[in-house]
Amino acid sequence: DAKTTQPNSMESNEEEPVHLPCNHSTISGTDYIHWYRQLPSQGPEYVIHGLTSNVNNRMASLAIAEDRKSSTLILHRATLRDAAVYYCILRPPGNTPLVFGKGTRLSVIA
Amino acid sequence: DTGVSQNPRHKITKRGQNVTFRCDPISEHNRLYWYRQTLGQGPEFLTYFQNEAQLEKSRLLSDRFSAERPKGSFSTLEIQRTEQGDSAMYLCASSLTGTGADTQYFGPGTRLTVL
Image (tube, rainbow over all chains, first blue to last red; front, side, top):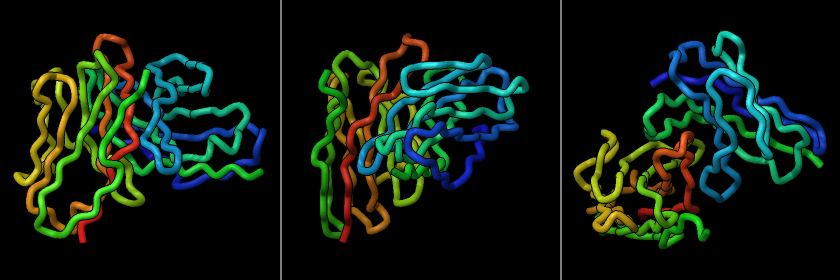
């Protein structure tokens, strides 16, 4: 399975933007980049995914480097509810199981 | 949309006992996944079903583990002769194939403690 590298933890002030990086230098041409997050005491939840182009949805934006070897999840205004572990996952096409790493634990300070 | 539900939410058992967990997926979702998560780690894939067929099993799924999805709706995960190393959060997720992202929707998990 293609691997991702994320910082163990990050901290943000409330109401400020957060940029969560993910390196995936061994990504294959058909791998999608998925982001899930896990709030305390809950199961993971889908955030966003993309292949080559940048993506936006109501939760976040995903910026993908031109060579696709890295990506950044952007939370435009962090709230206390965004404190969670964020997982960057590479996923080949074909509805395969998710392969989680350790993720980045995001703390949001009021 | 009631989401994915799992029962029980917590289970404490003694080593050597059998336990069974249940997962009710989002209705009409044809795929159902089981994952296990230990403290400080991300979830690890165990097995998944498409309708009632079990399509893949991880090498983590020892012979003591068995999963079923008899009518293609709810699923059960049974662990026989539990060991302390089985203590973990067991997560279930469901998805609907053919919807592009195959977004997986997770339940709240069943936390197993083996004494």
